[in-house]
Amino acid sequence: MLIQINTDDNVNPSDTLTKWVEATVRDILGRFADQVTRVEIHLSDENSDKKSGGFPGTVHLFLGGRSGRHDPRNLEKESDDPGGSCSVPV
Image (cartoon, rainbow, N blue to C red):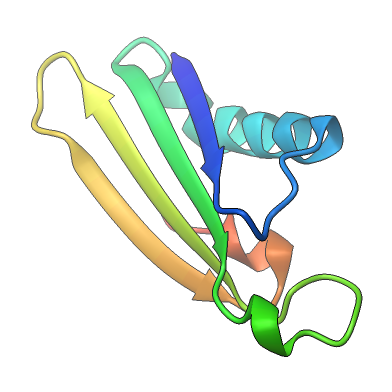
């Protein structure tokens, strides 16, 4: 399962963030690893111009997955909690 992480100019794609997102995706989708060929993740800070320090107020997550047998699936979610953006039902 290939995991590709993209960010906008307002999210720092640090090594720590990348490893955390990859681990979270593998933990959530691990049971489908033999079926999912690719997962694409786009993280963006929806209100970077309004933040007053610390982590952004609203994180937007776009997740797209591809499987060899099924059409691609996409999911979008916004959250005020960075961890909450990755807690999505499977």
